[in-house]
Length: 274
Image 1 (cartoon, helix red, strand yellow):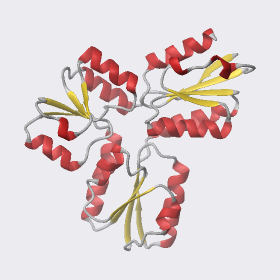
Image 2: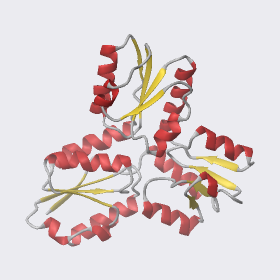
Image 3: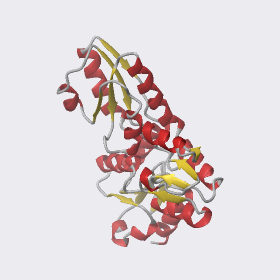
Image 4: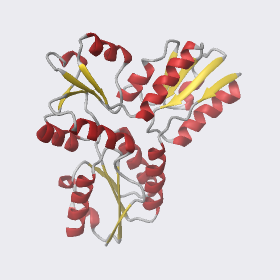
């Protein structure tokens, strides 16, 4: 059986940057998981004593707080400053961008539309910067049920699918007078999704490596499933099952933007043994 890695996979710029920041900030605490990868979070805890707090309320006596790649709500950031905590900002610059857009566009009187998951930490953070009416949607059907003003600004969660974003923006541009569209989907998301799609089309089995609570990894798995029925999402090599590979000639491997190379290599090593 041939094992082939996707052309683009794994750590994106924002995650690499955040990991380096965390490694340089020993004995700090992150507000929520730094990235959506439990194995890497555990490594940072054991090697650098970087702890994960589940809530801003757990800050207590912490002296140094790392802002996760997904960012945090504006009010939480103000709270940390008020407490005099040393803030280390690891928010991905591609996430900071929609935060700034929402703040500016709302100041100019635009209704804000965010294409994304309302429960995702990135979306919660971005939405907190808007001062006007804000609508978080996942489909064009949801958009059709909203009564907007004449001025609308649209941004996207950085890890969503571009075709779904275009469906929403095309509907708004067609039906409303003034629509400002900001494509805030990360380039790394485009590259990883396109590469996964290309590889899945010619593979008998796809293995997608990443956190099961990671939005971009779940998107990759969904794309692979469209083109390769036997697509499996795993967090580590421990989840691999030998029977997956029976009578398979080509195994494609890809990984989410929060998946470090050391996990990817462990997975490939186990597949090669099988």
